[in-house]
Amino acid sequence: MRILAIESSAVTASVAILEDDTLVAEYTINHKMTHSQTLLPMIDEIFSMVQLKPDDVDVIAVSKGPGSFTGLRIGAATGKGIALALDKKMVAVPTLAAMAYNLYGDSRYICPVMDARRKHLYSGIYTFDGDRLITVRDVNLESYDELAEELAGLDGQVVLVGDGVDVAGDVLKEQLGDKCVLAPAHIKTQRAGSVA
Image: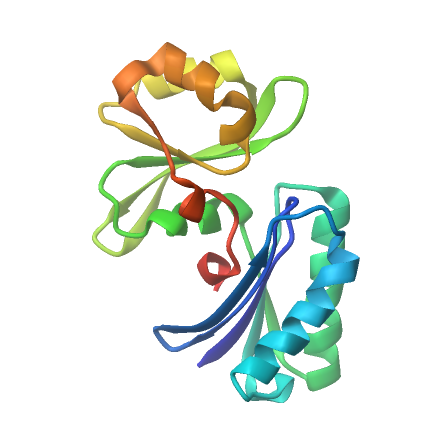
């Protein structure tokens, strides 16, 4: 099965092609251009680079949020346009669960955090049981302090991933100490490969 994945829930724009268990290509931009400017050219370029046509995919996977309303709308409209034009199936993937896949197989708790502004975060808590993602706590909107209190009650180390790390990482690290680890830059942001 070949999947075209689109991630547009935040500033990061990302597209990927996954074939069975192989990430064939991924193109990610974390810059100030809007998704309406970037997504279609990125999709066109990624297909050209791997010598495929859009009709060669079986499914279009799109991140469904939480996140930027405009970004999500652009990603969904792009995916839906491609799916309808090519008579392909489309699936919506929860953004925070997809972000947990950036740390696939990690035995620690994974807490994706997205900046919701005004010192609040969208967050979830996940862990892996072998290759299966387990939802400890689904999507929630809470203050930095509320999240820190919740994470302090877990019985293991927590890895924070997402753009919320940029705004709240220091605060959470200060409150949680060694219990909290911040994901490195190369796996911190949303990725279409994880959506796929």
